[in-house]
Length: 254
Image (cartoon, rainbow, N blue to C red):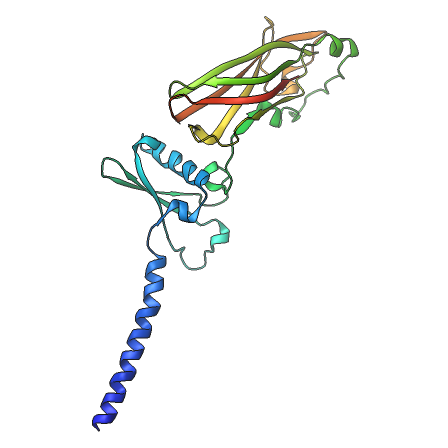
């Protein structure tokens, strides 16, 4: 009888030990992990910028960034875009949790390889509004007379947070038709500054007294000869390190 009781006790101990071993990995999987253990440094920086900005902070205020595993409810799969819980530990001793990247999101904090992005109205510039007339072809004489804005290298010193508007140069477009606006970033993801949304916007503005906004080719319309224009860059700085600069190359506006 005693042997039987001892045998049952041993079995119970083994079962308990097995359950404990099963619980331990599950519990560990639920513990917050340093962001850099889970994602790339660049993505962690983007997460930090996004979450810190929500509470009026920046990278200098953050002590650490952690990812808190947050199991989706039944029937929801990670592939469907379940959110990520990001926890900032701030230097003042407080913490802040935010859910990001739920659903289909393309902001830098939700990309494995975030990079600065150049945007302009050209993305939808050729969309045809209902009832619009076709735009005539560019005249050869206007194309020959036009002066594109070309800049090999532009270094923009960053000395304050907030909005920037930086002139690139002046030129002219043939018949007032804007066809190209491109630039390359010398550093696709600089580690000494952070821009809101990682976005730099390229704008073209008419210098003619009767010039219309370059928002849509059909609304802007066609004109005889050339249209004098100025190109500018706009962006919003969230954080920067002293001495930082935003550097662009091969800027072209035609």
